[in-house]
Image 1 (cartoon, protein in one colour):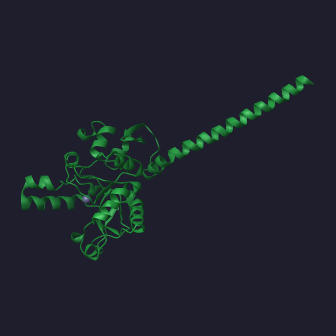
Image 2 (cartoon, rainbow, N blue to C red):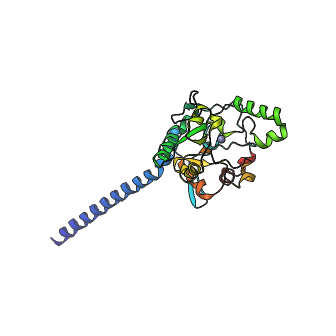
Image 3 (cartoon, rainbow, N blue to C red):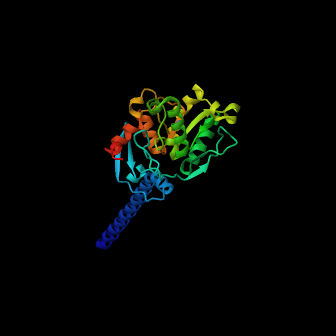
Length: 267
Ligand SMILES: [Zn+2]
């Protein structure tokens, strides 16, 4: 009798332990899924599998690098600058912008991958009393060539190389960069008459990274970016990296050199 009781109580204990184990496993899997979610989102945007291959400390934030392919020119972490030119074959996937913009009668385009985030940002700004529009978005290689050639004809190559980015060297070619303006009728009629107020610029500096955008050419960082301070120019990196870069106070050049040493010289 005693032995039978003992057997039955240890069987119950075993069942209880098994149940606890199952509950712990379910809890752990759900935690892992939550962590992986943001990378799944990013990867589904890029039709790639979420493979976390490394992690990197950016300022105070540790971020995961799902795939180094993200730094390729067709992807959202590409670095484009005066020294890091896009290839002449580069063609981004574009969509018409869904937010108010200058030259309202001609369509303006951005990379399809940033369209929803851009709309969310502009709506959030409006809700906070900041009425924004775009003064510029995607520009083609031909547009950039025309701008560059025009400047060379007027002021010479030396000055052009100081003030205008060469074809292949402008982030606007990727469709991942936009120039913001405060909303106004003159801007709507002619994007040359757009301008960004100090208070709208401050809202963007405080909030844009939540939507995945960084201030790409910050004040006092011209030696790193080779572009003067542009409070209106924002570049999409996705919220994970944008918030890490923003909090670090580093430029994208400095961050990319840390994540992918040699990237800046390898192209
Ligand atoms: Zn710009």
